[in-house]
Length: 120
Image 1 (cartoon, helix red, strand yellow):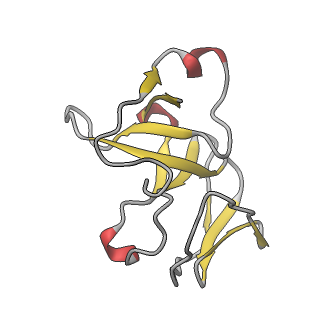
Image 2 (cartoon, helix red, strand yellow):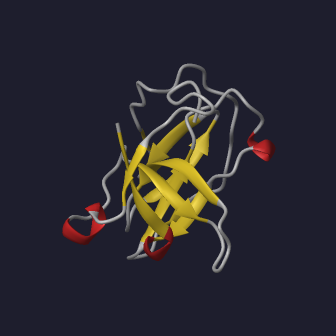
Image 3 (cartoon, rainbow, N blue to C red):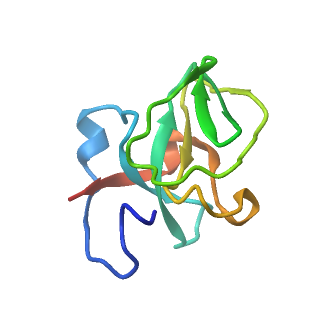
């Protein structure tokens, strides 16, 4: 999540936040990547249920419109195929878009994997 968040910085996470409201675009979330594992990732929600999303030349597209992302310092040249998100699916990615897409964990995640909202 650099440059937005620094390595080894201390942050608070609300595990109850999404019990009272739905996740929103731009939220930084903690995601459990595999059932039973303790590996967690911090990612930003970019795509919401029902949207068609993809990266095109480093720009995140929602329903064929570029998403303004003021938190991204340098875009890479990421390209992905278009995906239509299901009713409980979100598209997530980190803010460090300058790194190679193959070295970056991103993509579609199910609502049930969202463990909490990052609080500042």
